Image (cartoon, rainbow, N blue to C red; front, side, top):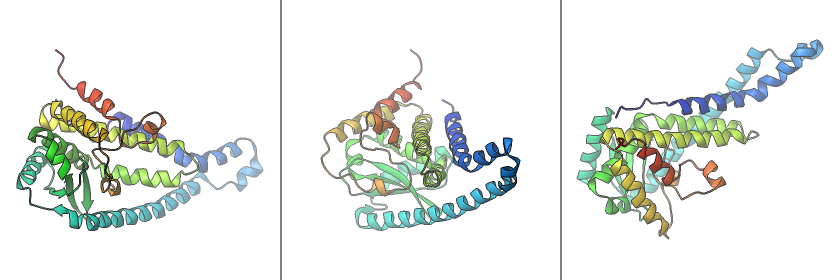
Length: 271
């Protein structure tokens, strides 16, 4: 299997449409006025001024979002400090180093979280990348399955998905009057999950361990009655999210397990 590029066509399309919809309310009204009303046209700000104003407001919003992101990352680490073991699981760190080397990314630190919910996620602290894995996930997966999860999280790091997450937060906040934009942002997040799955399958040479992992974790979650915490605080992508159906699927940042498995099945060689 060939390693996919960082951005697939659907991601680029969704990003372009989201950006266009974001700028349209500021640009289109003036354009329509200019078509037939010269007096109104004279009162309409030049397009370049409109774009500059939009860029200025986006810059201010971006600074605020980056500040919030850094605060949430700090809060996440502080909340996890009493529940983590940085290097206690040496095999986990060695496995992560192996996957990171295959993906050609810089060293990533493994963190084990004392949680009964099986999950994993990648996040940044400054310039350093971390992959957090819960004890519950370590307990239910075999080594091949665990490595496929680590490859999925390393794929998020390799694909710079934290930038996509920040961009999504910015345009979602900027376009509150346009509900379709947040829906497109959620679609972008789902595409990143598919891409991370595909990258994981490529790094591992087969999608079978990740398919097995998804099905196993899905069955575990169905009977899980505890609280789902920590992963929701991450500003990155969580490996597992609560099951969603119907309209919830459009609002979810994660595709369903069924959809992820179907997508991975396409990577299997034809029999």
